[in-house]
Amino acid sequence: MTKKILTIALFNSCKLSAAAMGEAEDIPVGAHEPIEVPEKYALDLLENKFAYRLGDDEAGGSKPTKKQIAAAEKAVAAAKAALEKADETGKTAAETNLAEAEAELATLKG
Image (cartoon, rainbow, N blue to C red):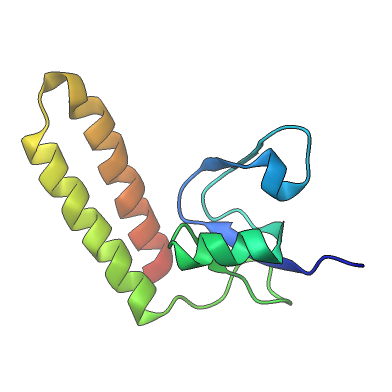
């Protein structure tokens, strides 16, 4: 039985679960980097807004939806609010999160 594979890209860099990917070790993946993932895991990542689906014939991804752009704008606003509230120890992480959110938004808007 062949597993169905979907091509997705993650909004942020992370490691994909070795167990879910059928690999020995977790797989590091960069933001917006196309990767083929087993359908069940891909659908879970898509549903939880960690990723977006790429077209079957597209290497660079499909056109983002208004919903994806709105979610990215909301993430930028949340990151800005978190930065304003961050103390000195959390400021660097908050700045990094804001930069990543702004980069994601810029990528989606083209």
